[in-house]
Amino acid sequence: MEVHHPHHHSSPRSFREYAAEFLMIFLAVTLGFFAENIREHFAEKEKAHQYLEDLASDLKQDTAKLTASIAFKSQKRQQVDSLVHLLLGADRDKYSREIYYYARMLTLREPFYATEGTLKQMENDGGFRILHNKAIIEKINHYIAAKDKIAQIQQMEDNISVQMRTAASKVFDARVFEKMLNPETNAAFKYYIRPPEQPVSFTTNNPRELNEYANWAVSINTGQTMNRMLMMQLKEEATALIVAIEKVVH
Image (cartoon, rainbow, N blue to C red; front, side, top):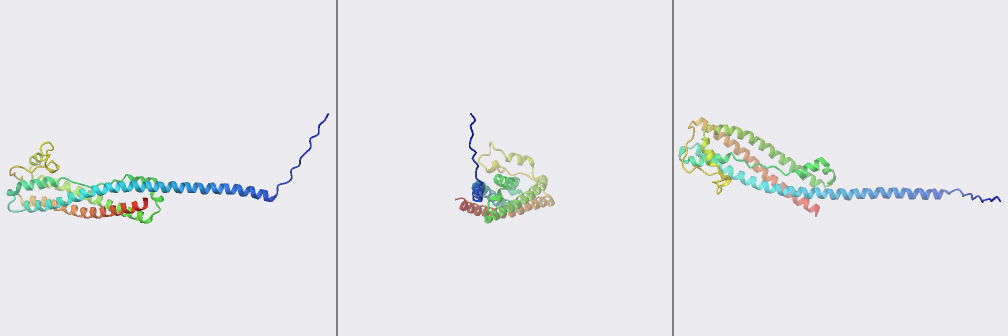
């Protein structure tokens, strides 16, 4: 026996049904888009805060290093003044121990090298783009420019030091310099440099050669003074930047 199944003819969908379905799809896509934007916004904000926290940590290390460099340069300036005065004075031989000590100390350097790990990472990752704080970005740029200036002056000091060492070889006995530095026996002395126990001789009394060395020592002192002033300014900028960052982060 043949069975006949009834045919159900579906009625055409209305415009409202199509509109409602379109609206639901549109809302779902839109909400997903906004949710993704919000997620990215919070992710960037969290990453920006992490950058700032790491930068503040680097800056605190920099301020400690700047403090040490500033103190070293202040002491060195006084030593250079004494060195030049005694070396070019009439009683040079009487103060040979002090002159040798100051000259030996002048060969030491305490350069400042900024902690640049976070800044380099921000530059490579485009981290400045997500900070969204113009005041802090401006302070960071000022800090970068100031530390780069210090690096330039330190390079100048390196070049002058080469000339000064050449001039020193005409005035001072290298054997005396060698004995003055000894970490094993001079632990009680700063930088393990001990002044000669007895008066020592100079390798020349030629006024021209003495004056040549003194001029290079003065040049070193000029660079040290300029760098010291810049370091003091850089330390102030670092401290102000740390305060600004901590206000934003906390």
